[in-house]
Length: 196
Length: 187
Length: 211
Image (cartoon, rainbow over all chains, first blue to last red; front, side, top):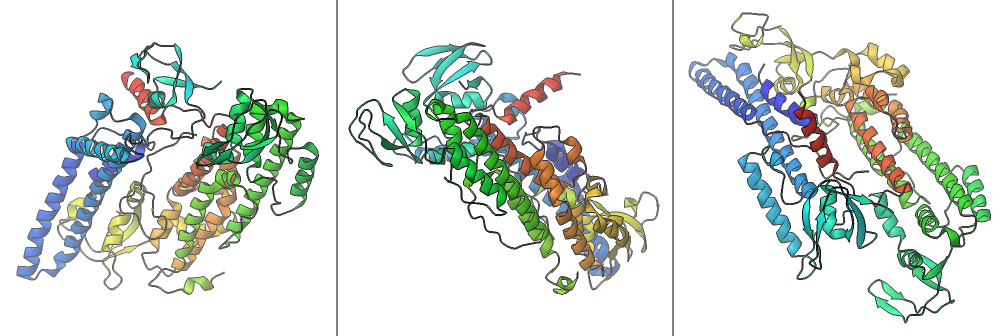
């Protein structure tokens, strides 16, 4: 049956229900596009034949192929769109720099889109709250205090805080740090927030 | 909404404290605070009360309703009535948790109060579930949410809204545009 | 509870599909017992059992919903669709008696979605199907709600097993409301947590390494 490849790439994406980004299925997309091209060409020639030779019995077949053509189109649009939703999420979960293994899962156009999104978001955030701008990816929950207690879950190297002091984030070390400096690192699983 | 956001809103509620320091009135966008004089009761928002309490700058006076006898009455009434009875504060659950966690030494019979409030909450949530069920099974079109608090609504909001949305769609199936509204007459 | 910022396009639920919803795309790939009412020339190769050049009139085939919907016409019979057995009178009676005993995942798993979509094919039984689907949803609501609200961090897989996809989504919404309240009660609501997305990536990386 037609459209089998298209549903396969949709299933592959749907299986990762939590929003993870699987590797861009370039080969799958190519195969779907090839099928679409073939369907289009077959229909084109059958339409010509139906017209010139008055073969109206070809119409059901033409319609059949056309449905499958539209179906493939829908699957590809949905596949690409759903991936963009996931890529947008990455900006909020990881920050503006993505780990390389995730970048490897994106195609060139997606990387380009991510950069554009990053820029739009940055421009918007700069326009808020006076000259300094406002980082709206911080304080996703109402903060209770300016400083929080954190523990390092892995070696992360040196880290500069507001007053210019440099501290060493070494595995299992504990620190009392400004909340806004750590939130992203906690989200990334480098630090752990300890509640007293 | 995340419950931490509901709690954040609750922190704007006013509570009485007895400070042990003196400070002139301070003027803030959200309203003026103080003046603070040692031993003189003054009204402040909960977030400030808790902050001062943590730094041992004040004693918190529990709200009037945070009292074993009063809460027992409320609990009995809540159990007796089929509908939701008025609660003493729109943030009774959040305030109980905040004040008991940070200032239990200022609240007489703190443990009993904790249990009572939890009982009231459980009774109300059970009612909420019961009424949601009859709301769905009788296919009602609107419901009154009188006397429900934000935290109570919040625990079931997305579930209930999603359910109602599905039900609405499945009901619209009964009258598909083209084939006319005959389906309504069945049953 | 972990806050997510990935919200997939939701399914349309009723007779309208959401064009970009992955759920709806999978739903519209469900196969329906159908019969061709005319010949489809030059498509015979799609039917593995025959070596004819054409799909003959009167061929029975399992046709995906999207195709059946696309080919179906009221005026001209191109294809006719038979009701899957869960929507036929026999099963409707069973559902009517006690909708809670039915394993909708096995019978579905898109019981509501497919039931709504079937209304596109003008079957004389449409009003009964629409009514049965609605009544089943209502009849099972209490169970869906109770299981999603009472399962205090228990293993929920047994409960969820018998739910249709739509009910599963509702179940998850109920659970996340309950979990986030319980986290708050235990004083964990204001803790900043690692993104579950990040954690899951890490888990996957570890399992990827294992042969």
